[in-house]
Image (cartoon, rainbow, N blue to C red; front, side, top):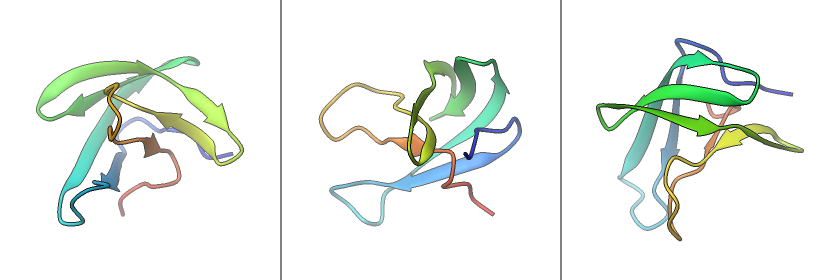
Amino acid sequence: MKKFEVGHTYQIRSIGDHDCIFEIMVTSRTQKTVSYLYNGKQRRSSIKVDADGEWIRPDNYSMAPVFRAHRETV
């Protein structure tokens, strides 16, 4: 199972605009939460787990980006 790692960057494309890319950089993590930089601000979210591994959702609206640990940028 893929997990979020400190110092790594993760990206996801917008559902409505293919040219819009959301990005986070993980600054720290615990067993249940991950802290990260998102839009220039320090944020923290609880980690959820499913069959594909860990994931977080920084915002709570219908088309909010969902960051998955297996979508790490290289």
